[in-house]
Amino acid sequence: MVSTSSPEKLTLTLEIESLEASVSNYFQSSNDALFSIHKNALSELKYLRLPPAPIIEIIKAIAYLLGHKDNGDWESIRKYISDTTCFLEKLAKLHEEFIMTDEIKELVYPIIYESGFNTQSLMKYSIVISKLYLWADNFLRYAEKKECLLRLKNHLSIIIKSEECCYNENQS
Image 1 (tube, rainbow, N blue to C red):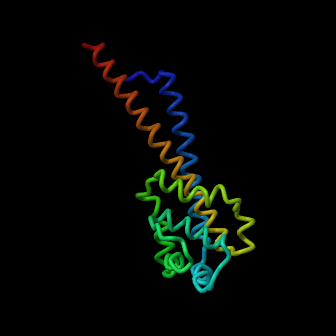
Image 2 (cartoon, rainbow, N blue to C red; image 1 turned 135 degrees about the horizontal axis):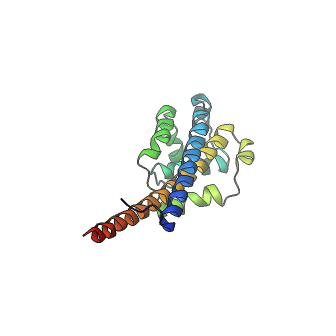
């Protein structure tokens, strides 16, 4: 039997449990924000001739998360929301295979975290944009926590294998 008293293993297990709760909370919060978006309200955005910069920036950040890297002008960004059902479905499924990369961080973090945007300030432009921002913020936090969780689980697995190896050697 593997010893369960290893302080490092116990600490990692507690950190993993805490991170699992955070991952779950951020995932739920991102879904709550996403599912509160009405397709008709989102459709209205694509009919704006030239929306305020915050609207463009938030949609551009979300497009980056979806893997699009256009030049960021309104005409190209507007294409991402042209099929609102498809757009919302892509956001709902993004967590399934999403991998946080340095490139995504470089492109998206300045828009979401360094621009001074928040849900309240964005509401004056559009409730939908405010909700998309809330989704993006929670989704990014979810992805960060999940990445950290996977690293800790991998580390714990290595410790357990090492202990099993040592235990088996001692039994010989």
